Length: 64
Image (cartoon, rainbow, N blue to C red; front, side, top):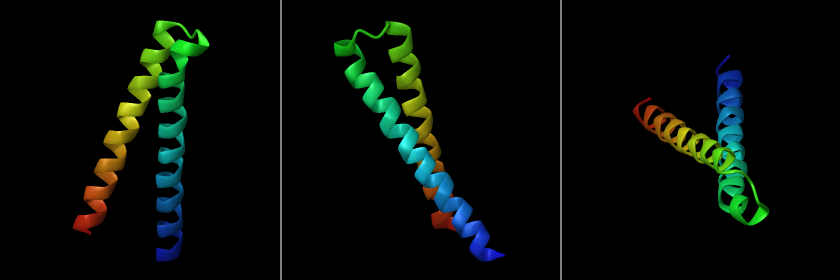
């Protein structure tokens, strides 16, 4: 049972990192690609949410 929990936790963490990289790239390259301001702000907000979730997961893992 523990192996499944660790595997799903790793999958969530990897997914958060992937979403963070994609949204950060969209945010930083968006101006040069001609993306609308609204889409860049949404990408930035998604990046911030991913960072917060990754920090929370790290802290909870350290306490366990």
